[in-house]
Image (tube, rainbow, N blue to C red; front, side, top):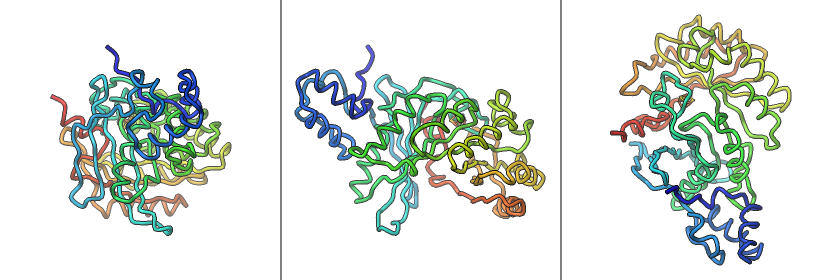
Length: 345
Ligand code: SF4
């Protein structure tokens, strides 16, 4: 038997329409939307007619691990049909408005078909797409944790398990629900969608009404190296990908964030840095350099700190802005798909 869908899958308008079928007023339905999204409520309130047709929280906690420094929680969830997904909560210092900020990294698929060689999820294969409500539920669950800490989820990144653009429509629906002013109200500029480089969807994303950020996994500056790390490069080589990114910036006026995982001995040489600088010089982009989070299964090593700095210096020489980002939660396997890999038999 298929599990019940989650109420979090409904936009506010859809919830109002579903409630109206059971004679429930618009205001009661909107109150329920606010309660389950913004306040983490788990009851149906007056909208009893939807009970038995929907569940509110579709996530069952399998494990919750906190990093030694307390900055990161990683949760492994079981969905109604038994599939496992991961969500990460990252804690940051208070901002200028004294808000205690939290960023949530969500999964969009159970497993992933993209097969990136450095990624534990990629090595496990594709299971299924997540429904929009299953994506939203991850943020709602983390907002409950944040609320208990008198903090607030301010940012959402689509960088967990799965390729968001391979599950495009549900990802966009989840973004619209998360952005709803009567729900969690995550500002569009506080949402980042990361893709491994699906060109048609990048061009489609450029025309979406909400001004969310785009991050593109680059990871190499020539096709041969990139194809060896990211098989998708055979479908969408660098020239096509970067043309799409330039078009995205031209259409939206927004920069593209390029993710570049530094893999010692593979893509971290001065020559690779020079090629990357040449490739991106003059484009509206920002490079995030991420020293790899080594997996037990994978052959990858982190470059020494001096190597990351030297790589960054070459980019600077080409006028390409960059940041070295050490991943949070390395001691709790917060890299994509790693916790699920350990929970599997
Ligand atoms: S890095 Fe992302 S796109 Fe690549 S296999 Fe892993 S989950 Fe999929």
